[in-house]
Image 1 (tube, rainbow, N blue to C red):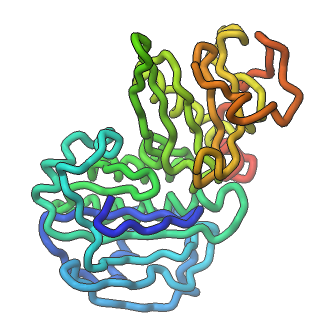
Image 2 (cartoon, rainbow, N blue to C red):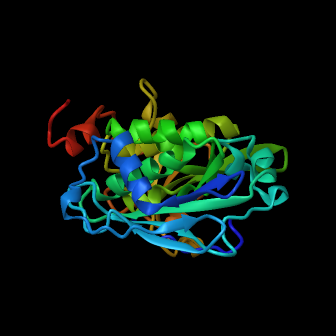
Image 3 (spheres, one colour):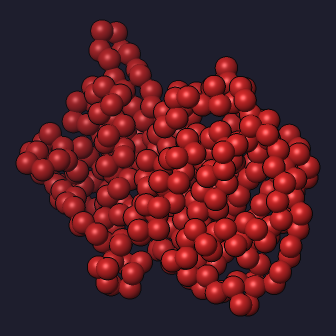
Length: 326
């Protein structure tokens, strides 16, 4: 994390673009570049108030972007540079922070400046957080395309991305798809109980998109399988529009219910958690979910049975396009 942590509100997104040297620009240049690079954004700028501000990323910056603009993609967006932020010790990075960008330590060695872009959702419907994350992604990509860009810290996921990954992230979001691996981080752990080895994990940043995280309780799986399970669950809940229910099961195509994972709901405060979470429990997990979470809220299926979650391809894309496929 940066030297001074900031609490991220639900539906608000921030990206720190790390730079090899300070840059100077006027805020209107960034607005124009955003509109030129991503003309499909639904932004009506004829109502915007011009707040042109000269910026230097060696100095204090806090300026709104597209202030007063209308349209479905409008949001409270800002450019920020504050003393004490935007610095990381390469030797203190966690594995999860480096997962998407293994070269981040080399990039940090050259980091001399930064600019932070932020965007918050302007409505509470199911697409509001997506539009805010997309706008933040597009603003970050404007800076990530600069030759002095070294990398980007996506705050809600608590991980780093390469400049090219940020451009790809913005492009995917502009096609009305969730760039889940970029917007949502994974915190993975290896566990050992005597001779038995387990892994566990939890998403980081899904909360800002859906209001909860997803975790895998200790399971006899390798880290790659746990990571894949979490990523798949995140895609199901966002792109496919699934609704998990306490007590149901989830598994891959053709998997028997008795070998599928049980879904349990863990409300905020469970074991000190700061948000709601869906917990996926492998059938061979040592985690006693009934003792930890109580009986299921819905009528639990008999052992070896359960309602299995199945794919609904293209759900979110149709939702954000008003029911249209294209």
